[in-house]
Image 1: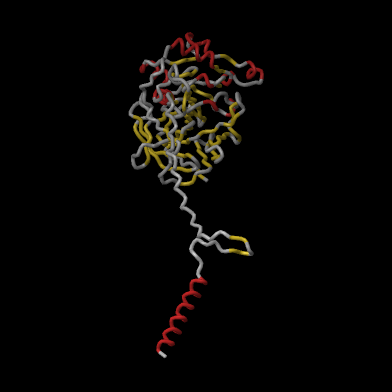
Image 2: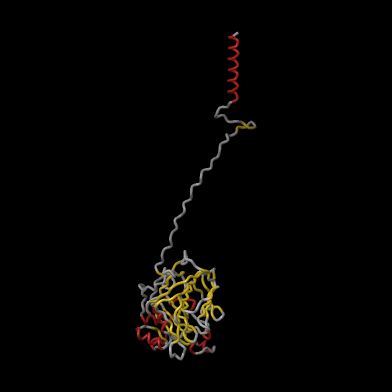
Length: 369
């Protein structure tokens, strides 16, 4: 009986083992689907994308030469010192010629509330005609000397005549026989009825010839103290300044309107765009400065001339890229350049490009919108 039970148990065990093996497939066996073999399903794992290395920015090569008045690149170094021209700015003398090519323009009072411009050019070959041209004032000479510029004018006030003589300056004067051929009277203006004092002009050929005669070779070592950058206001606390009205006097105001497309201010005066009659372009500038100082009447001067103090130091405001910040200015002496700083003494950096500098009385506050 025990033997029968043992045999039955063994038989059942063999049956169970056989059933187990019959339901298991070998690891390498390919299952079939609809009678066709199918590939085994494998889990797909996407590899992590390799990080793309960022290319190291290649800095633009520093140009061999830069315009000392704008900070922009030049193909070749200038041959001669900058030129600074006294430009007539009375209403009856409009329109002006050559101003759109000026690198720096200074504006301040001459007499009786009218203003004159000092248009400064690093390279005179960029301009065709300049004018009309008027007489000098001693403080405009200070401005020209601060840029180591050749001063161009026709006649001078008593104070300017004394300054030219006492400082031993070489200037290009329309009343001097040496440079008489540097200037000409415009026949078109004469025919149009312009007064004689609004008819005097010069051009690039005449000025180049005068420079050759002076042999005022460019001095690369002269430091005009101007600093430029493509991002002058980066990290600087500023206020919005999209529209600026600078009231020079009861007679004259200058308007600057910011154009974000060009990152520059459009200049207007006498109620309309300040256009260059030579190019028919409105004057645009990257930087606007308003410098405050003492402007007083010259005692006993029957023509209403003024004295403008340009040495020492004072307050001002810098406008750039539609923004503004307070600044300080200083000028050691007549021949020294202006030095501009932020209120905390940090050197002021200008945007590369043209600059318009308004010199106004201490009680003048620009209207900013």
